[in-house]
Length: 241
Image (cartoon, rainbow, N blue to C red; front, top):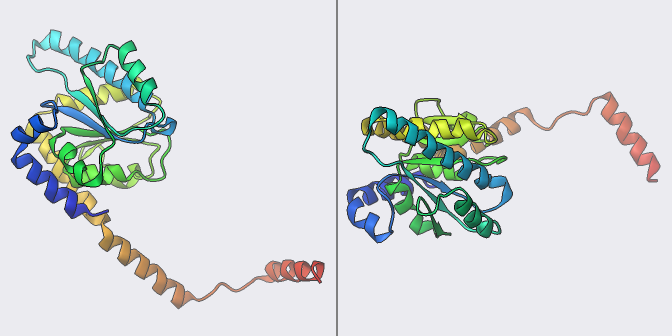
C-alpha cells in the first residue's frame, strides 16, 4: 500500500475541508468504516454498537449538559447485505445518522478518510485488513477488531487507537463514546502516532523483508532430510515402481 499517497491526499483534503465536506455531503464529525457488505465484515454488529454509542452519548449529555451532537457513521462499500443493512437502520432508528455513499474507487477514498474523525474496522475474521493501513496513513485514530491480523502489529492501545472483541457490542459502543469525547488535540496526536507507526509498514519494509528472507535462504541452503524423511521417501518410491 502507498502510505505516502494517503498521507498527502488526506492532508490536502483537510486543507479544504469546508468546501469538500459540502461537496461530498458529509457530516462535521463521523466514524468511518470501509468494507464489503458481507458477513465476515460484521457490519450488523457495528450498527448495533453505533446505536449503543448514541444511547450512551445521550446519557452522558444529560449529565454534563454538553451541546455537541453525537458523531455520525459513514459506511463505504457495497455488497449482498446492503438491503439487510438498510432494514437494520430502520429497526435501530439510525436513518439520517448513518451514511451509505456506496463503493468508492481508489482515487476517491482520501476524501472520506481526510474528513473523518476516526476509523473503525470490525471484521469477525480478517487475515490483515489493509483499510486500517489506509486509515493510519491518513492520520486517523483507529478502532480495530482483535480478530484482524493487523491489530497486534499496528494498534498501540491508547496511543493510536484501541482493539475490541467484534462480538461485544457494549465494548465497542463504549470505545466509540470514549474516542468521541476526546479533545481535538488528543485525536490529532493519536492520528499522528498512527501515521508514524504505519510508516514502517510501506513497500520499503516489504522489500527489505523479502531481501533478508532471500539472503537467509541462500546462506542456510536447502534443508537436509533426516532419517525418517529418507525412509518415507524410499517407501513412496517403492510403492510407485
